[in-house]
Amino acid sequence: MRVISVFAKIVLLSGLVFVAPLEAAQPRKVAAIGRLQPRSGAIAITAPPGERIEQLPLAVGSRVEAGDELAILSGHKARLLQLELASQQRDEARDRASANLAAARALHEEALLGVEVVESVDAERIAQEARRAAAVLALETARAEFDRLSGLEPRLVPIQSLERKLLLVRQAEIDAGTQRTLLERMEAATGLRRRSAELKLRSAAANVALAESSARLDSLEKAVEVAKMSVELARVRAPCHGRIIEIVGRVGEMTGLRPILRLADTDHMQVVAEVYETDIRRVQVGQEVKVTAEVLAGQSLHGRVVEIGTVIGSNEVQALGMAPTAEERIIKVWIDLDDSTLAATLINLQVDVEFFPIDASQGRAIP
Image (tube, rainbow, N blue to C red; front, side):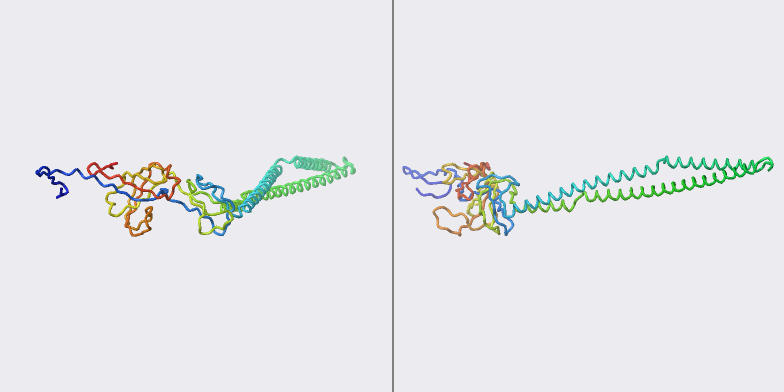
């Protein structure tokens, strides 16, 4: 038998020659090697350089949420004490300011009351006005009586009576003058009290404004905020949820450029496969993939192609049992796994990748 074309073959049987069509050629599967990695990659968690690691409370494999504490650095206790001191100073100043404000407001109320008292009717002044009015009336009466007696015939009025009436007039004048002077002094004193009360009111209002401005304590609030930030600088927190995949630092070491630990979202794993450049035309986005490895003990992982690289480069994953080489020309292909449970704890595991061929007539993978 000799093959004469890719579509037919000649069979010699009992001296007869006939042509039979070849069976339809099956699409060739594409195989590659790759490695497991988190879909979003690993995050290197670093700390400010020059600090000493005091605590690493979590272990490899621990799950964390955003904001969880990953490490505590040196000076943490001292910074906590500074925060406590700043908070105490702020609270004490706030209490003093509140007491001062309450006292200022009380003095303000007292000053308002003083103004109201001055402006209200003064019983003493009213009584003095009544005494002055009585003295004036007595003076007018005495003068009228003196004028009446003076108008009579001298023979009808004894000189002694006229002198007594004149004496009464003089006494009434003195009394009226005295009562007028007392009233004027009292009114002057009332004016002074009014001015004093108004000054006290303005002073009390200024004290209230000062106490209110002191009660804001902006500088002390900022000191507390700075102390809180200082405390946070001594704590390393998770930027997102994930799993600790590696702890690089050790308690007692100084921090520097090297990360303390690495964090990754292992709930979503993928395979980075290295496909030969000659096979890449048989790989498509959405193509089904089977992933196997010896460590999986017969179990396989499944996924789909989500991205195909555009750069041809050297392979990074070496085939098991083969000498290291960087001469192969490969293209990277990224595959999202349907289930990441098995792969979550096998980051960087070398795996074998099998791409199910695409049926050109139906546009789907052939298992």
